Length: 203
Image (cartoon, rainbow, N blue to C red; front, top):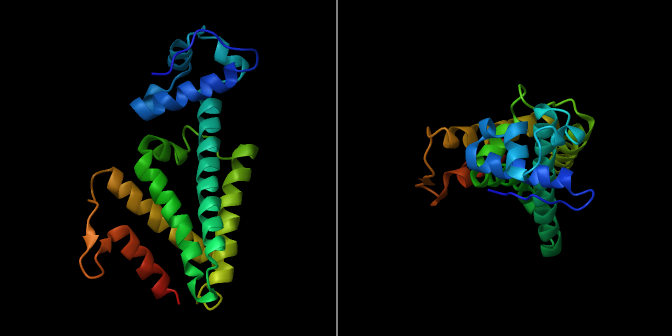
């Protein structure tokens, strides 16, 4: 567990965030309370209020940070494809980046992933959070328009369907309902086979 009893001026907010993230990874969202974070950070239970007014504000800040992480992963992957000089016929690879980023994040950080969708704990109308969520969604829609000009539905339908499929699969895996098996026909992990099927059906 992250614990520190001294902070340089201006570092406490970040330290509280890092401690909260560590608690989330270890214990799930139930382990992230203002008192638990303050105790782990080695400060009084009233100290966090100067930076996060309540638990909801702290968890919303964590959600914002995780969407920023996902966005960075997406942009890094897209930049790699740019450097490879992806041909127009391979533009679907850019759309796959988004679903893979969501699934990779969910399987790597299950407690963080589950927190993102908790409307009872997260303020999804928070302006800073909305900005980064919109960036992810708008970037996805842009790639769909560019990579699937002949799709038989609009870009938003494709975006919602792709996100729903990725989210549903992660959720079922994390709940233990699905196992990480391979597709026996194409000999690839089922998550990749699902993406291939999804994009083939739409074009």
